[in-house]
Image: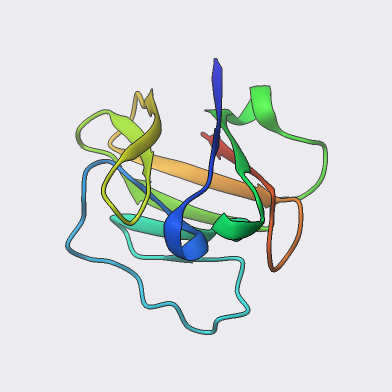
Length: 122
């Protein structure tokens, strides 16, 4: 299963989580592809003023582009879902997760300003 959406997020970042987290990662170093805590992952997006970011969210086997991920982390998902939201807390896309702990793999089309973000769940 996979879902895709096009969005232009303010501040050029997206949050990946089970529910809005209070444990937000520190964005350091700024050159990293993403930042994570056990409850939240922040990933870069294309600059809002330059155009949309295409987000593809799905099972790892359905979205894997055939190269190693740019970032991998474990995410707590006790609510049984993975959601992607923007800084205004608007949910961009969501998908169910069958586990309380989900491995998140992220592929970016560009290391600094990706116009395509692929998020694989495992």
